[in-house]
Image (cartoon, rainbow, N blue to C red; front, side):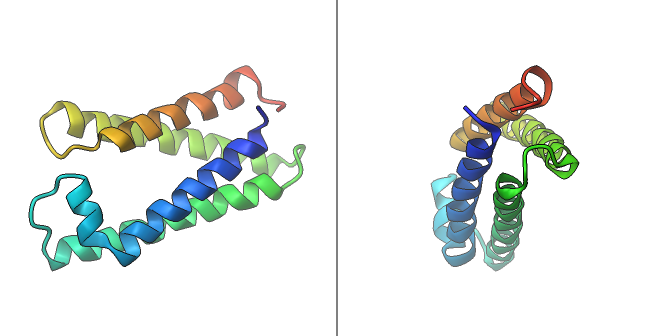
Length: 125
């Protein structure tokens, strides 16, 4: 697999996930088993959706940058750090009995492993 395809896949998933938070925050919170989200929680969800779409756009732009560009290496490292932090936060929520973020935990874990692979094992992909 090439890094560019990982960036494209990340961009697509981020785009649809961000859109779900922006246009249907209450339904998205309910899918994550957050009971009775209020208007502040819906606003936080819409802000989260905006940030997720921003991350997707960065991934999309990184996929289109030439492979020898140093900017792409920095974006790859940033995506790895973001995915590791997301994995830790979602694991804490999942294993502490909080909200059910199981799918997000798995998604962030897969991104952590994939970006870690391209960052440390195969950096010239």
